[in-house]
Length: 94
Image (cartoon, rainbow, N blue to C red):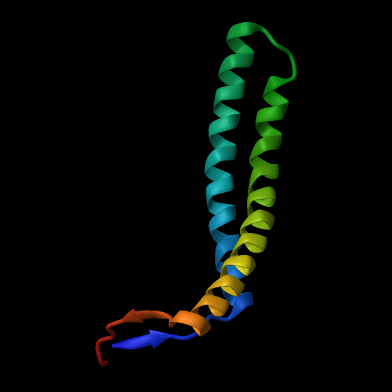
């Protein structure tokens, strides 16, 4: 068994930011579709613009939050792994 003693904070934060972009885009598309449907069915002007804006803003917001959350998670992992030990993984030889 191999043990992960620490993780690089920046690389972990960047991976979480990429996950945030993907999930933000998915949520943004869903909000755009729902906004368009609600706006057309209820005759509410401007709801379509909010939907289009959500496709742009959600990935940005989710990426920022993912980066910050990933950095905090990596810091906490490094702290706790130093105290009680890291995650043990079984790696296969190449």
